[in-house]
Image (cartoon, rainbow, N blue to C red; front, side, top):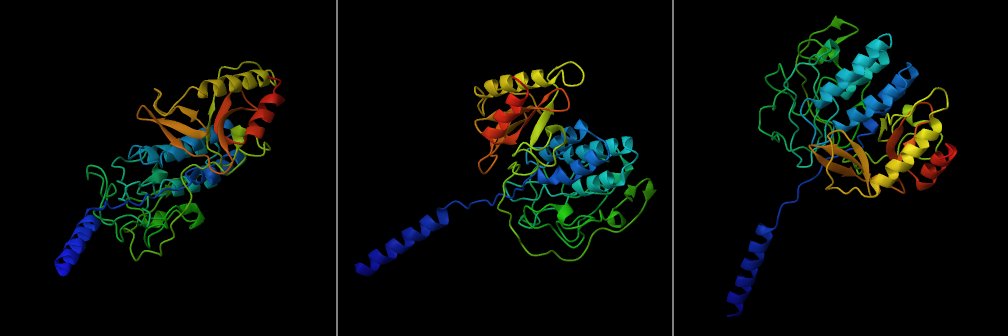
Amino acid sequence: MVKITALFVLSALSCLVSAAPVLEKRIAQVTSDSKAAWEQACVAAGGGAQCNKIGINAASTLLAAADACAQQDAADDMIDLAKQLDNDPEMIRLAQLFVQQPRNAPDSLQVPYCQQAPKNAELDGLFHCQFEGSKFPDFSGDQTGNVPLGLNQVNPPGSCPANPTGPIPDGVQLNTLVDDPGLENAAGGASSGGASSGGAAPSDNSSADDEASSDINNGANGGAAGGAEDNDASGGAIGNNSDTGATGAGGDFVLQNGQDAQSQNSQFADITADSPCTDGENACVGSDFAQCVGGKFVTTSCGGNLICAALPLVNAPGTSVTCTTAADRDARIAATGA
């Protein structure tokens, strides 16, 4: 009788173990880091407030909810501005690396590839790498984007022209691993400054796993905290520069910017994750940064002791929604006289 009971208990435990849900590994990154170097190059080239606006949008395209071609569209915007700034080569190089940065994968499946050609020839044949923690060879979505445009396969799986030896360590930014966009490996011949180059599909083996502990857009970078940098030219803080309608020349808009920031922060107090929103809209939900994707706010913790807040711009009309400290928020607004 004792043996039968023991066998029954073991059998029951086995059923419980087999019925336990399998936890998915969420692969994420600090997406604000993806555009920081490009933004700095853009500011150095004279891009001004446009740099942060394009950079913020670019970082959001690495989120799981973004369209399959949103990352490529953002890289096109980066290059469009570079061409307006005397074809700045550093901005173009960093845009070519950005379009190959892996995207977040909350289900650990490979992220589908864009199936449309880019607007700028400098991006021809370039596609994003995958993170090492992805479940190869499986893809998310409807399975129509399992191979980059113009290719029959990606070998080895997870590689990209800039990193032809394999996928990228989880959470790591490609531009910290390589300097060369790998145009010689790009199918169809991506170009730099108008010169075309051909090449074969990537090949060889993957590197070791290095899972990142950081979450997306934690906002701990750049000039958000401390108050030293002007938000319209910051090098990495998440946020959004918005023209709030302030008018005037010189410093005439400063007071209005402070008042607009106060008004926005007051409005944010009533916003929840379920509040209606317009795609692309940035806001604060509690202390979290939020962006509207598909008509719904997607929130991101600012991390550390940072909070989300609207800050007044210093050198241009408008405000910036970003991660900062409460003291920095108050000091910036008070400095406007609001």
